[in-house]
Amino acid sequence: MTEFINTILNGDCREMLKMLPSDYISACITDPPYNYEFIGHKWDNSEIQRRKERIQDSKTLVKNIPYGSGLAGGVRNKRWYEKNRQNILEYEDWCHEWALELYRVCKPGATILVFNSTRTVAHVQVALEKAGFYARDIVVYRRSSGIPKGINMQKKLEQKGFKNPEEMEGWHSCLRSEWEAICVLQKPLTNNYTETLIQHGTGLFYTKMEDGGFQSNILENIKRDKTPDYNIHCTVKPLDLMKKLINIFVPRTKGSIVLDPFAGSGTTLVAAKDAGLDYIGIEIEPTYIDIINQRLDHSDELKGNFSLL
Image (cartoon, rainbow, N blue to C red; front, side, top):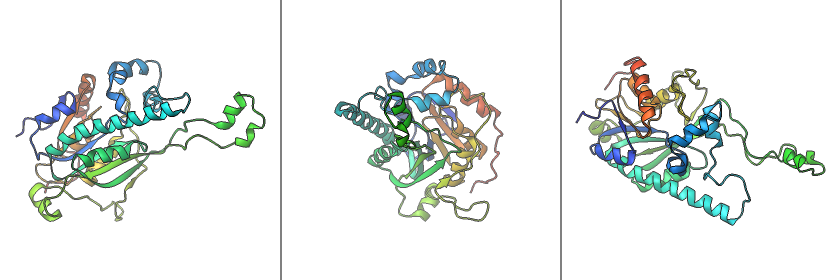
């Protein structure tokens, strides 16, 4: 079945995945919303666009979306923590919903890479394990910088007129966030790695680095994209990062298909195309479909240096 190859489906991935055949996908690399309410009524596309108009840098939007939505600030009382807990459990349930269909469409041995925040990645892993996948690793994507957030207690005490606020110099409510988690899971193999590779072309990771070293689970020193034409999307990942992930986690075998059920601005799909691989994208917001198609049209076809096995 080839009707879905190298296409972008517009809709909710929980429904769109049902259109794909079983045991069809070789790898899934995706960057879903990091909080359940991102995809609820409070954080639909119109709300995101409204807030983006109020700030100059769309990346600031992501940094200021509250964990649990209306839970930011206020008194950390029992109700606050209960709402916070309920929110993350709803997010886990939502991840489990799309993971069930994702499991069906993946080939045995297919590798699943899911970006998430350091606070929520454990729930993503549990959700996908419940769907049938098994956990392989957590890859660290270390960004070049991170912006400190939270409360600077010295400044807080100064504002409130407390004596000797300098005694709390250096004390803060959180650490600087410099990395994102990439949860690595896999659909169970067919008996072993050799049989899985022969039957499905999946299951293995490419570990040979350019300097001859063995690939680790920490990715850093990856340049960020400067092209502004697609940065309308809030959480666009560097193209070089997605190319790196495809290089490591997607064997170049005939019939390999890379899926991104939360395609966004299409970086995963562009990286797959540049590597000479087939792809399928799913994106719920029509605005991003046009961006994806423009990027795919302008990408260098078969730019990758790897041949199909």
